[in-house]
Length: 175
Image (cartoon, rainbow, N blue to C red; front, side):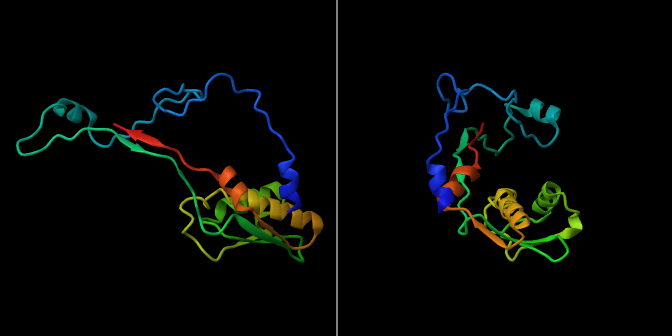
């Protein structure tokens, strides 16, 4: 609760934002230097030569498909429990969709050999992609605190913060 109250006292101003904010991908400038990604499977030359030709009995379909952005809304908020063990290692209980990446990050950040960090998880799936890598900050906070305090620490992110920092899938347009 104290962390939430303290966070409410912080005011962040974006000094870099100049001009209008673009929310339409068709009119937004390409600020990161990346061009749109084009996915294609098959023989491009053969397909190009067939363009405009519709075989007998086949229908030609064209159009635009827009998929709006969506939030990862998993039932359980991001949470982790970190428990120091008697050998200077750490046991981290984590609800996630994969343990390899958090395991590597926690061990690396704390300067521990990977063999001294144990990740336990009881459930995989149901996070809709939101617990593949987005649980790492929670796991890292709990791990750092447990290591510094030399006692078990449980960290549960409140829903508002969880939704604000974890985001979701970006929108997509296909032609």
